[in-house]
Length: 146
Length: 146
DNA sequence: CCCATATAGATGCAACTGCATCTATATGGA
DNA sequence: TCCATATAGATGCAGTTGCATCTATATGGG
Image (cartoon, rainbow over the protein chains, first blue to last red):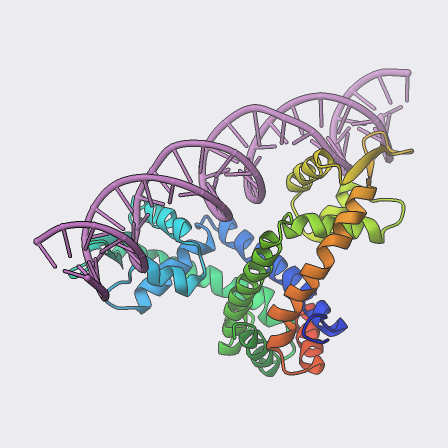
């Protein structure tokens, strides 16, 4: 029976997850735009690319960022147009490609971080009583990702 | 100093909030669509309208659901077209209107809930160890809403 | 080697969202 | 009363996302 019907607590957690997600994301995006920066998705992609030395295939970004294939495809198109990434032919898979971050991309990450950091602190850090609460929140949210 | 720089735990909580939010939302939306139902936003609006006996003004929905004004405006347009809501003139404010849920809207809520409920349990309830964890998650997420 | 099938990524089109602006009514002060 | 300003909601347009489909290369079985 509990395999079908969520508890009151579960439904509440779900509702709060949606509301808090929208609220915090909206606030952070506003701060970034306010400062003249592109949307968060650009930062996410560039950060993944910087982490993965040697670049990444679009499919890897898709899996990592939970963005649909066709959206990654177009996001990369915009990032390339803006000069923040470069495409390389995949040496072994003719269908594939390797995306690498450009110098301009690295510079964008550096420029955005101070603003982004402040936003995270303001909209997440400051709302929690302690680092312990933040850790606990992170732990519980991780569980939702299996 | 801590007014600007988030702790490691805070940054992790933020990242997990975004990932878990996208992941769970995506899964629930997929289940609903799979069953032939409209997107979650429709359910959200109709649920608010059913709760608030006597209907609600668009502005109230906007505040409650954290959806931008112009998006509420168009969402209501679609809901009206589909016959799930009705518009009434506001008796005192000539600029305003009152949105009420229709019988078809109530029926949609009833039809969707079994599928929605199962999805919440599968993608949230089942991932947490206990109702206590769900309650704790809800509490921490609430803190992010101020 | 050839073909059937699978996978990587792109793209046309429709739906949706964000942004700025617009219309209509309300409200408060001269 | 009249006007300036504020508020509720709608809308034109551009940018983004979802959906289905398409192209090109890979891979495994005969």
